[in-house]
Length: 281
Image 1 (cartoon, rainbow, N blue to C red):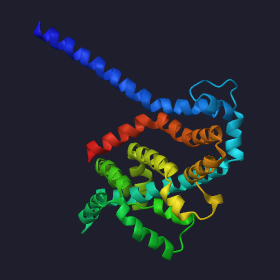
Image 2 (cartoon, rainbow, N blue to C red; image 1 turned 30 degrees about the vertical axis):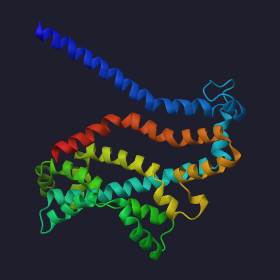
Image 3 (tube, one colour; image 1 turned 90 degrees about the vertical axis):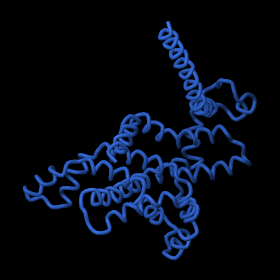
């Protein structure tokens, strides 16, 4: 009887938790649905009732956001900056991670320790020196933004370090016996074997760079070079006076859709990648 009561109690608690988590999930999803519905209304219809469905589904709002609001230009700026920034950030993290995980040399533990200590330094405390450095190097341009994403010793390096640490060195020894060099072993053997961590880090980097507002806002002086995050912030300021909110909602959906699709497609690899990296570390 006691076991049966405990079993029933556990089932009740599981149902309660599932209901709570379902409610939490709906609270996260609903704002996107609301934004999508209102992006298809006319401006007058939106101010009349923000909760109703559109009478006429105005897909033209997306065309207007893409062209008239310049979201298309900002979108493509973000695409090429995200592609280059992701490649450089992952490669500049993978190379030191591989060296620290597989080659023992004097000071290797110190370098790894500095990467860990870096997490203890508040990011806001580095803004002043960072700004002066960019100013002195005349990097208030897309190149400065790209260099900002290329920092290798950090979160990405620690994740990849865990993956490389768990790969047997016998693969490298076999390749060395066949005449392969160090870089070939890294690029053609170790990187593919660590693909779970690479995919996870790439996904994390893409989302972070695509959504980054601070660096492009500070370093990009020309409005034609704005990324979609900066462009959206600029559009929000404009809509304070023109109040064309339906076009703004359409622009927001254009900005958020690539990230949502990517996360939905790669969420299992992202979660498993970080979990496996943590276990191996």
